[in-house]
Amino acid sequence: MLDTVINLPAVILGFGALIFFHELGHFAAAKWAGVRTGAFAVGMGPVLLSWRRGIGLVTGSTQARVVELTGSPADKLTDEELAKHGLGETEYSLRLLPLGGFVSMLGQEDGNPEAVSDDPRSYNLAPVGKRMVIISAGVVMNLILAIFLFVVAFGIGVKFEAPVIGSTQLGGPADRAGLLPGDTITKVNGAPVSTFKDVDVSAAMAKPDASLLLEWTRDGQIREASVLPEVGPRGLLSLGILPAASATLRSDLDDVMSQKLWSAAGLSAVPAGSVLTHLDGAPVNSFSQAAHRSLPTMAPRLRFSTPEGGVVEVPAGTTSALPLISENGTERGWAGLSPVPQIDSIADGAPSESLLEPGDRFAELEGVAWPSIAEVQSLIADSVRPKATVQRGDALIDLELPLRSDGKLGIGLSPASGPLQLTGRRLDEGLNAPRGLTIAGDGDFVQFAQSTSAMSDPQIQTDGKSYPFDLTEDERDAANALTRSLALSPSFFEPQTVTLQGSIPLEAASMGTKETVKWITLTYLTIDRLVRGSVEVKQLHGPVGILDVGAKTAAQGLTYLLFFLGLLSVNLAVLNFLPLPVVDGGHMIFLAWEGVTGRPPSVTFQKWATMLGLGLLGSLFAVTFFNDLSRLFG
Image 1 (cartoon, rainbow, N blue to C red):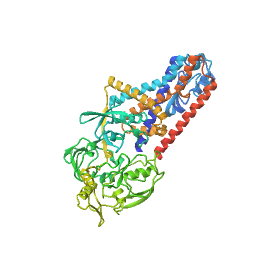
Image 2 (cartoon, one colour):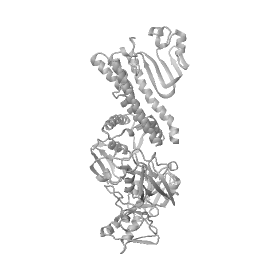
Image 3 (cartoon, one colour):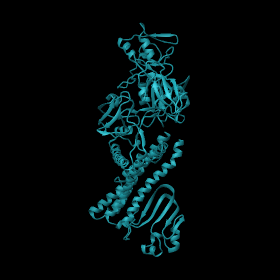
Image 4 (cartoon, rainbow, N blue to C red):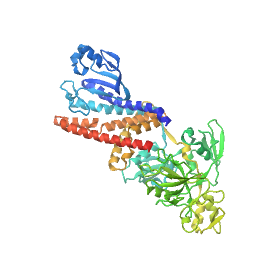
């Protein structure tokens, strides 16, 4: 929130600059075409300072001085009368609100097709070709500005998440296609990708029910497969993958997670910014590599290199590395049993963010005691506002949990660390053991399964009681196949990144131009996917959401802000050229009609078209404004 407040002015000024340059394009083209321009304003609202040739710089508007000198306002004077008094036709003003600007042309007024003039220098009497240049100049200026911003950003260098898989959703599209953590995706449908965002966007913008051809490298070998994206947690088509985490501990840990979690992970003696170098004596080059390495022991040793050049070695907790969810959504576990899950992450902005904490376990959810991961997913999907009893330490807390707009809680679940508690169908099928029972003694699920399978008469021991049960030979063999992995969250570590940088001017200019073309295409694709239904209206951001995202982006550094403004400039260009009557694209349609027929559309038609356009834009603004507030306060 503090980053947002600090960086918000920079984003507002940047957004205003994009609109200003758009209007500057219209203004420069109008001057070139000989159209009379009465005003060019930087900002909106009350005039702070203004300048007009023949008057100079004054506080407020120059209009009062013009009336004092001539007896009439400037827009009522002819060119000859202005020249007689040595006055310029254009007032240049700086206004209170730094939100863009505007240009006023004689014979043209947005939303009022009747505001025409018989003056030979009026906009409405200029040749159609010149008017087309004037109308399109704002969009052209935005595209030129986008290229410039991208060139500067790439010249300095911009870090993005690398297209390396950190984890795959169990049973998800990428998992079924055989992709593994550590794989580097190089192409999507034959097009090279440089960042994880490229892969993510390609999936989100895929045609509904159309597979993507992925190419990736593993151990130096090139592999490929067709993968059908599915709707993910954000409501967009997804491959079911997350980016890889590097070996460097985040330096802003105090701001993103509590010291309690940091200490619980066994890292209280490790300074922020340290680099993970070894796991149980074996070198590692990223957390994602370490997290997916099978571990024989319950307390492997992690070795870190500190920012001061020292070395710190600490034990790390582990979790059972077994696929908990099968493709049909049922629990796999072992022998019909699985560890009671705990919440390991909560999505930013999730409605239940203030109610739940990482480490919580569901003692009961919608009447089901100690539900498994699959049961949690099913119960949430069938509920509007689920009731839960949460175990937090030794306390049991009753809650009513609000859901996100996509019907999900926005939490991540994993096998619980700490005391081993069991759940699953085997407890429901005749063992006479209660769900959520805590296994006697220290141990994790792997140790429990392997020690139990080694017994001649298998039994679960807890609180002085024994619950005998039979095991098949396959279940005994499966126990020895279970492994462990690190219980650390990847959120403790910086993402694995790749820096996109090119030498100025040629290489950076080429990269900037390609980036502009790519985002023009993606903006049109977004509109197409909205129509097809694979992108929902609730995914769109309005002004509030754009400012929020922009402020968070600006907090990452200057190059990120420049890149973000480049994206916005492209979006402004594309949206302004849509065939809606109140934007530049609609005006171009009217001009094309006039060029073909020799006369403009009737005033009545233009009025109704303008009203329709305003209604559509007003509705879109209302929907996106609601979306923004839902994300911020939902």
